[in-house]
Image 1: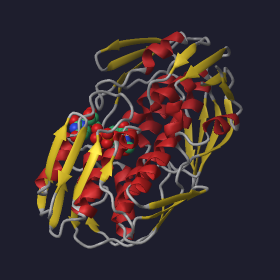
Image 2: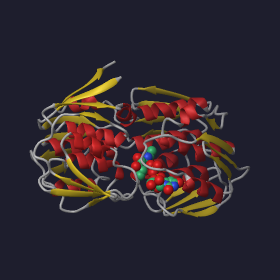
Image 3: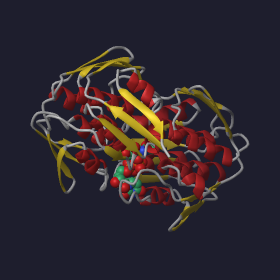
Image 4: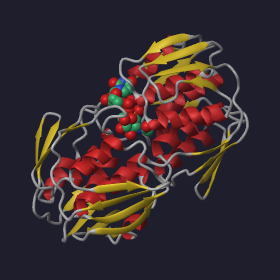
Length: 420
Ligand code: UD1
């Protein structure tokens, strides 16, 4: 078993490199099944979720190969429409293949997806959108099966701007010869990136980045070369690590355009953040001030739920009391009991966590249960002079490329050890 050993208590100083966005590359890889000639994707992070998506593509009859951070996908020979449980179960985003496969082959069968245990995570909005375009969808407890001889035009008003449902509706809509309008669409930058990728492959889509997407589908897409946008959650995670530990950190190959909600909280707590052309610098005091405002997670451009756990960890030693309210997922506080083992003072009241800054944190044996929660444990452990160990690091491998090296480049004492 692999365990992460973390000894902290020192400010972080130096430069870390940010990779391509996990939540962008995964739907883009699913979208590649719509392209009849090869796609070349640059800036693909080397993480387990991307590897899982490549395995799904190969299972579907596509070729998919990585060279460094570039991935080439050729879907011209795609001939299968099923994703079995051993592949679908590895990550939540396997669900995005549903709309794409349906659009390409007229039928799609998917074992129900895995991913982080953040609550029930239903797919009713995905299914309702596909049904509105004329797909017949049959859902059993462990599988969903969709068929459509022909998809038709529709106005799909999402009751909630679900990221995944927007992506699925968008990809399915490209197989429809009529116009599809998606209202109350998610506006996350990763959706905008997906739209840009699809446009570069010949798709006719307007409204990227707004809550109304209009798709004129029905034309096969061609191959394209595309560069995935920088990962704003990885960027925010490193900002939170620097904020929690103090120090002076520069993040390269990223920017702060999509991070104003996160940056304004950190600035309010005493950090200075400045941005260069492709970089971001944070200077953080040895000890933060608590956040005066309650941090409330919300769909983009609100405070991202994916940064809730890393931000909580950054605030563990902040002077005063901070509050974080989680509104997107009903069960996204798995990291709280683990952070308490470090000596953190966190009270939970429903969906709100109240963090009273501790002067010192201690070392502890921690266990991660989800991806961003795992990063919160790393950030917490980095603030203690004593050694901590973290198990469950398979979650970190799903979403952070080169994590230990990146942290060591900032002076952190972090290593992965194999124990029996
Ligand atoms: C995506 C991101 C994830 C992020 C989340 C919210 C990827 C691969 N994952 O997940 O990192 O935390 O957006 O920003 O991009 N819901 C329903 N029915 C549905 C779909 C969603 O009730 O059919 C609910 C979910 O249970 C959740 C909320 O809507 O409470 C948000 O989910 P959604 O925006 O769909 O998130 P994901 O696409 O799963």
